Length: 331
Image 1 (cartoon, rainbow, N blue to C red):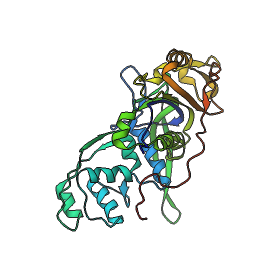
Image 2 (image 1 turned 180 degrees about the vertical axis):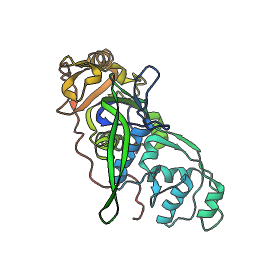
Image 3 (image 1 turned 90 degrees about the horizontal axis):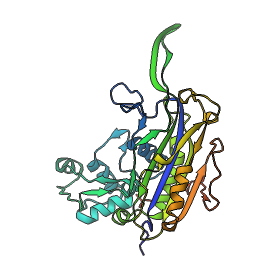
Image 4 (image 1 turned 45 degrees about the horizontal axis):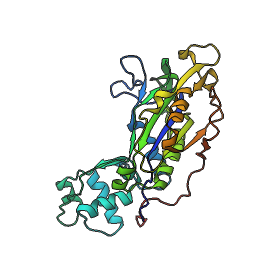
């Protein structure tokens, strides 16, 4: 029985951050910004939150590290094979092992680039690993996230005190760069055709949605990201065999001041309303193509209009039971 994703889905996800840096640039670790002043967050950053949530719940993650050390794909797979008392795998069998074992490979795909020399070092006998296919396109593709309003950049200063001996302390000034407040919007597509290749199931997709919701909050446990809050998740499920999709749902979201403050002065959801008028109109115009629309919403987020009565509530706060959705590793 084919248990892969049965229909195409699109999703919209909004979360916020206050006095933090949602995604530092590689040069100065400042919030990433486009030439027009729009701040953005990469898809890689959101995927990291999702993967970290999976890992915290005992799932096997392909893009990860072993015993605190970053490792290449070869080392990751060798580690998995060792746990399952398997010496070597090849061709389609090797790719099937990867997809069964690692939920993030099923969701996001991977380039299965094995290094021959690394394989020889890791394996007890000469290994010649040739995965088929060598590259797997992920069923889930994310757009770059964008801050949905003008945001104020801030330099946040502090002092750290370290004890260097009895009654001796030394102070160090610290600075990190962040945003006063930002409401961030992501959108993405889950493609049923790619899901057949990557073996992504309907259950995997449900888990993905909940991992996004929980991941930004629970796994943003660093000084620059603590306090992130998920606010809105909308999932559109299309009719089976329907090839239509909108493409960038966050383009249909607007923010409106709730109290006359300028956008750069916003500090919480109390300062604005989210306007979904364009999104609702777009969905209504394509309703014959759509099987269902579900949503999860935080109690803090104010939406400027009543959501359509045929939109269904989605219980994002309840995670699935902690039974691995990936193949048992023998742990």
